[in-house]
Image 1 (cartoon, rainbow, N blue to C red):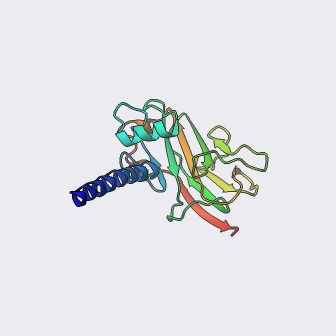
Image 2 (image 1 turned 45 degrees about the vertical axis):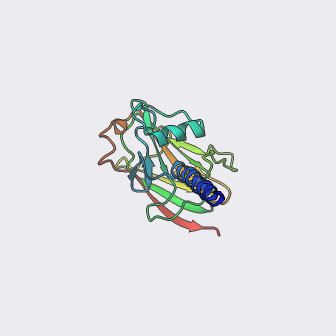
Image 3 (image 1 turned 90 degrees about the vertical axis):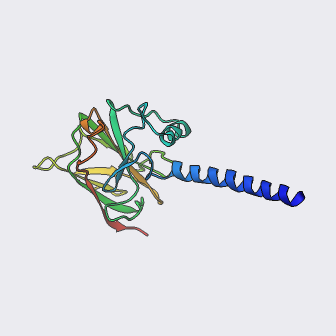
Length: 194
């Protein structure tokens, strides 16, 4: 009788602990249920809609974020460069290419806890589509680094992992079929101060 009770308690604790751990893992990962990945960029197109999966709804509730609806826009997050390396604040990066069509977009850097990074240079730690200098072919090149660079510069500071968040507002990409076949800018790693 005691042996059976211990086995039942062990089975229940494994089931509950394993279930909680797997849900925690799914909520903290950028891949998986409901995610659409284009190069290094990942988005959850249904996150602000009634069709959102339970994990997306749980992310919104846990993080206390205001998710954009399908008609409002779409956020893409990159935690890795185009070659698959983790983004680190002590490295320089170049974001280059064409941005998807949208009325307006913003780009900023966050830490692992999704807190916007502050720049020690006194510069705003974000860029938007109305202030960037474009190439003759309408592409954009942005340098992400702690040191100032000419042209488009996204200032970051400190050390450790980071993520880049690109939010497109009033874009056809947010439509249910818009994410397939879009082109996103590449993220290339430069030098690192290690």
